[in-house]
Image (tube, rainbow, N blue to C red; front, side, top):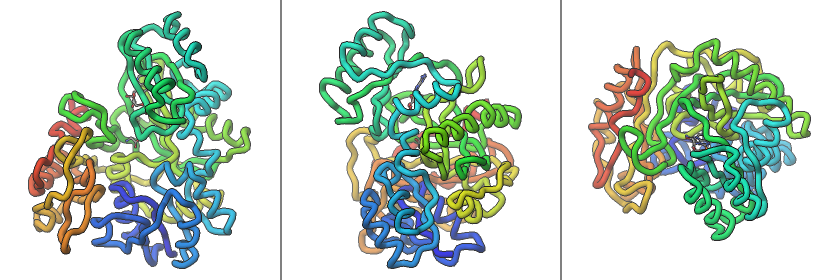
Length: 424
Ligand code: AMP
Ligand code: GLY
């Protein structure tokens, strides 16, 4: 089978790597990919946000199955366009992907089908939003969210009314996130620990992947600004088998039923961002895809081929249950450019990538890299994810950090405490 992976980050590299090691895939192609992925897989230029470009590529390359990594192409309607042209794609349609691209829709869906989540209101007028903050119905802290996609920056946890008002003003008046902030969701602050729960679904049945936890803050001890994710580990110790059953019964199944009822059947990976509270698991957000960096630790943990299940999910006939998983634990550390998530320089030479000690026992998944005369240089904020497995989290951490220590580039920074939470 000829498979196309759409996207160009470390998550997509992990997908290529996983599928490339399987019997069913005759060739893996990535579009647009990046210079690091291109070391092992054929990468083709394409604007992943323009469905017509990708459809043309699928036809030119005689692709049998397209797997979409990021939310942008899903929201642009890539799966709809591929389907209309008669091509099989694993991922939700544009309307189904609104579970991620419109927080207002996700909240309405959850309310309609009884999925546990933070109490919230959606406001489309500034005066309404300010009124909600004034009447203190959710207390403080309170969470203010832009309705639409905002590259992970559209959520503010406000400790008091003044900062909540500032957040609302930035979204609705300054239009910091453009149309994404035309509506805002204001919601109750949930206390607990976060976990990421993933299923692959055909819209009716779901197959459960290993759970994970990511580390969103820039610095050790969860300090500093939010980032796209500085590391992750799998599986989350919070998601026991009993907890997984509870999440399936109270969250995944009602949400899939609700989406079908809305005429938006959902196929592909569904990511449930959860707060495990004293009252049980509650949804913080849904994403219409695998997480990044979670995918980099979840995919190595699978102990069976993924491709047949991607094919079946896309075709509406997935085998329910849980993926077979390895007994090992996995830790992934993101190596980032100096200054990230703020301003950073690019074009720094990356040393140590061909260290044989690195190749042995750890995986490097590339994100923000470019080719300069046959060598890789930095080209983004999150440059790469180093992943290793081990019998326990301590062993996995040791292996991941031993590998990370072999790599260097000017300004490089990374967290030293990825996975510590799983041990402590
Ligand atoms: P989101 O983009 O919706 O995942 O939000 C980003 C982060 O904000 C989440 O990962 C949580 O850490 C935090 N967050 C969002 N909503 C809530 C909430 N209702 N209560 C507590 N924390 C939240
Ligand atoms: N790791 C969070 C995300 O992919 O949205």
